[in-house]
Image 1 (cartoon, one colour):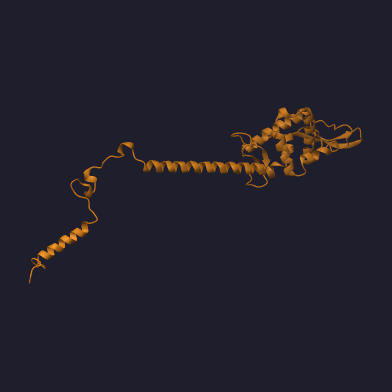
Image 2 (cartoon, rainbow, N blue to C red; image 1 turned 120 degrees about the horizontal axis):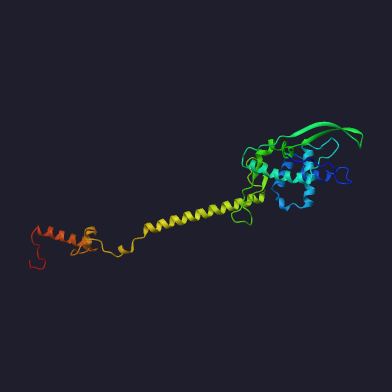
Length: 270
């Protein structure tokens, strides 16, 4: 449970939350973005001055969520210890949400009473007890926008194998990157990976072709056996020449002439 709230504002300021309402945001999406950025901020980087500002930013967020005062007139500003506790619990809440785990909430032990303000002489409505401040901050934000909270999967600009990892509220259901820069970086990486995969596939194909066309060194220059050689290569048989068909025609014409008897001698006297 979280400790009591401090109810004193900054000295000399009639509305101590006025400078901080713009930081938190004026609509639900902006307030949820503020909560995500706060949850991702490392605790060791929060200086005492930052913590002082966070106290008033949290008070402005609680005010925007309908938990604006511990009483009707008094601003509800967390003390430093509670601000640190809210920061840690916000981080735990969003980590479970992104992992789609069930998120239990501590019950609120608050009660409403009327008290007389001795300074103003007026009666005020007070809510006493220790509320679940994280639930108070997020009760209006998670139902309409919880399903749009994403973790950016784009590669980090100067990190090998690291991703952006920023938590953000997507503007559309299909949005997966937190910014246009991350979208371009992820697209460039996908293009390079696809190109590399294509080049590797082409190299494997060329390697298979070379292995299929090449022969072992022991079979190069070896003479084929006689049974596998064509008949024209057999020893003792002459190779065909261009004059082979003409010679066959002359032989056939001689055979025809001999069947009609000897040819007359054209030089003999009549």
